[in-house]
Amino acid sequence: MVSRIGKKVGEMGFNVGGGAINWFPGHMAAATRAIRDRLKLADLVIEVRDARIPFSSANEDLQSVLSSKRRVIALNKKDLANPNIMNKWIQHFSSCKQDCLSINAHSKSSVNKLLAIVELKLKEVMSREPTLLVMVVGVPNVGKSALINSIHQIASTRFPVQEKIKRATVGPLPGVTQDIAGFKIAHQPSIYVLDTPGVLVPSIPDIETGLKLALTGAVKDSVVGEERLAQYFLAILNSRSTPLHWKHLYNRRKEESQYDFRGKNEDLLGNPFSRKRRLVNESEVLYIEDLVTEVQKALYVTFSEFEGDLKDESELEILIEKQFVALQKAFKIPHKVGAEARTMVSKKLLTLFRMGKLGPFTLDNVPNASNSKP
Ligand code: GDP
Image 1 (cartoon, rainbow, N blue to C red):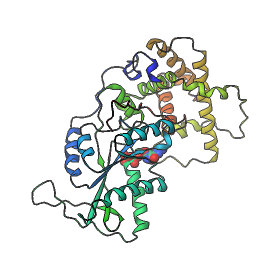
Image 2: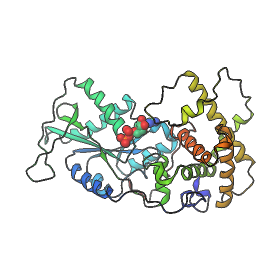
Image 3: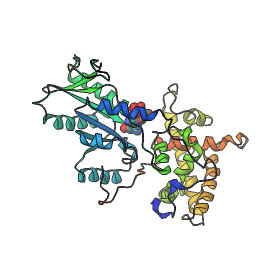
């Protein structure tokens, strides 16, 4: 557990890229005001959070507004989160009387389950409102668009001819009505999910929360710097002794590959989010599994050979340095690349983490019963 270290992992300065971080430009406060107004339209909110950080991916400023509304918390990207810890989180929300469900926004069955809860909760108000509106909100990159997209597809099968929302809505100025659009998901009462999500500004009370948000993609990598993020990720891995899980790989005889994968490293992990990236074919799948094994082996070997005290920040830093060197080899990044190599190692490591290739992780600890806010 992270708490094995005296200082919290996120509080560590690390030598490179340490120091103060300017998380958000000032104008983001206006976004919170705008969302507060738009929320008035919604009869129910689906608050999407990242299942890896169920607490850190909330917006603190709007929690009182959100919790006063009918709300379902959707812990998205459940495929990337540790299932045991996620279940504890779900128990925690249920103990706070908060509806919560873990989902994968790309999976129809997952989204159907979420919609079933939404419909059930809205049936209570059926007699009052002929048209009910559902709004999806959440911090950036948490999967709101993916969810709305899946809802759109489900809505089009349920109601192939989609009707327009029939409900007068108040605009920001007196006498001005607002144009809203959504997908009809149920009839009697008519339930529409608004097609535009509400983007919440993440709350960052301390640096560790910011690092978690950056690691999971809610804050841009450039704000923290890839290297610092990769160091933070390695610190988490080491403090949880995760590399020991990969011991079995160390002795495994490396099978000769029938493909020549040299040179694909850059293609596959150079810019994983590029829309131009070509489809992963069978040989690339084999290649990436091979690469993951090399990375896990490198982390296992450096971890198990290290004799320092990992509770000591400076010793942990030494291990992380060794791991950067080992990872450069594992990623086959040539020495001649020089200073760029560290950034390349960092980017590739972060990509593997974000693809879930290094295993499922949950970064937020479940609060104790005494601290029971959803
Ligand atoms: P938004 O900024 O909240 O609208 O987030 P997006 O819907 O654009 O999703 C951000 C990224 O997360 C995209 O690359 C999605 O494909 C990915 N994503 C969304 N939902 C899931 C999920 O349940 N699991 C995984 N593994 N990725 C997801």
